[in-house]
Amino acid sequence: MNRAMMMSAAKNLLTRYGSTKNNIYRCMSTGKLTTVDVNEKSGVAVLTMNRLPVNGLNLELLRDIRNDIDEIEGNKCRGLILTSASSSVFSAGLDIMEMYKPNQDRLKEFWTTLQDTWLALYGSSVPTAAAINGHSPAGGCLLATSCEYRVMLPKFTIGLNETKLGIVAPKWFMATFCNVLPRRVAEMALTQGKMFSSEEALKVGLVDELAQSKEEAIEKCQQFFATFAKTNPFARAMTKQQFRSKDLQQLEDEKAQDLEAFLFFVNQPSVQKGLGIYLDSLKAKTK
Ligand SMILES: CCCCC/C=C/C(=O)SCCNC(=O)CCNC(=O)[C@H](O)C(C)(C)COP(=O)(O)OP(=O)(O)OC[C@H]1O[C@@H](n2cnc3c(N)ncnc32)[C@H](O)[C@@H]1OP(=O)(O)O
Image (cartoon, rainbow, N blue to C red):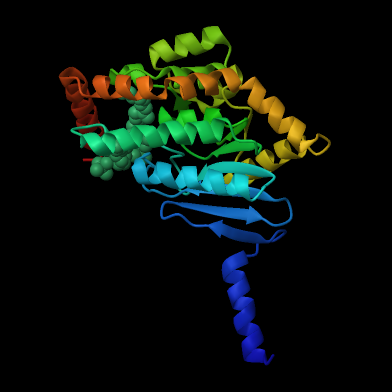
């Protein structure tokens, strides 16, 4: 191999395996709206949501996340860290545009994909953690709390704020919240639609640690995964799945009813009106 060929091969490798100070990262898959980088040394995959500006969870982003989780599971990665390409928003939750004046076929597909994404993430056999590097309301909080561990950057907010929008978080959103928070704290926060500051979230246990940067948050998630070094991966995964089986089974059993209830609720004129007013208030903020 001559020098030019060697340079070209090295360039190709760097494009595919981009190197950082300590580790080699392999880009496993790149959905249009997500990227997945696997640390070759640790086997940990970092799944980055990249639908800027706010990672609103629309049908396409949910599909990409779902496919990435499946791929990470299939590749037997040692861990999955969910994070955001934005420096101020982890995810703004469900893209309200999917629910406002919706096309009914797409609305069905949107909700079914959300259900499947949650089942895949909450029930994942791979250890999961969220590096919450920005605001994380509603569906963003659902994704973060579906993971086993959360590290958040200061001065952001997280919570299930649905009641403030005049909508109701489905049972499985609530179950996910209750898997993390004491029941009384969860009930109060859900009914109030409370958004916790990072510092408050740490205090009540909604997040496990704070970090000063995204890199530090990812490092802390990796340290969490390292706590499983002396456990049997199969026994670990079975234990997690059995622990979460009631919540998972409930949605599996009630998927069709949950979809019907969502469609009925979203199509109510009063709900449509409320969503329209909320969207206007979000847009007015930027004017
Ligand atoms: C019926 C059953 C429902 C089931 C449960 C529902 C769950 C959900 O997830 S509902 C969604 C709830 N989400 C929110 O309430 C968050 C709303 N967004 C915000 O609070 C903020 O945008 C922010 C804190 C996440 C980020 O603030 P900032 O960085 O200042 O960005 P902007 O507010 O200026 O937003 C930029 C741009 O994005 C639009 N947008 C924000 N969030 C959403 C959203 N969830 N869906 C659709 N669009 C959203 C916002 O309107 C701006 O648009 P433009 O003005 O056109 O740039």
